[in-house]
Length: 111
Image (cartoon, rainbow, N blue to C red; front, side, top):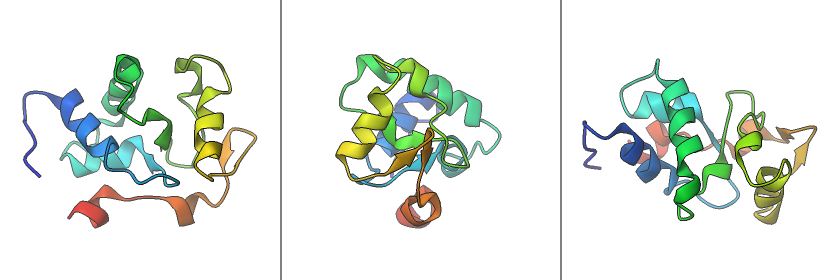
């Protein structure tokens, strides 16, 4: 993939758009893939800014333990969970069930 070094948010969105339906990844996994493993927080900022970009499936990005930490940035407190469940991802107590099995690692999947 050809990522543009000067636009981190666009690079994040490009990776997020590759996450398959029914799978999730973490802020840190995206940051690591983009060569900024210490920038998980910046990935979170990108996801927060993605609300003007409906083509970016921000609901598929969770924290490193599968917790829906970004849920407050969606239209309603349950919108993130509802979007995941619509793709077959089970969520209990704001946490993705079977997180390890559903985890999509861009480092492994995209090389």
